[in-house]
Image (cartoon, rainbow, N blue to C red):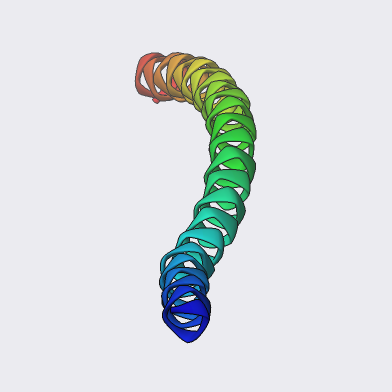
Length: 87
């Protein structure tokens, strides 16, 4: 009778260990993945912010180039008109 109790206890301990080991590994994996996702989320937010700022600077530069091009077009038109009138 005592050996049966010992056998049952050994089987129960084995069952508990066989269930807890994968559960602990799964918990560790989930924790690592959660940390990685949080890190990626932070990096993505930073990248989006930097991307928005970069696009804003690019568009401002393009607007400045458009204005400068317009000024050149005006000067060329005036020079061409002056040349036609003088010729």
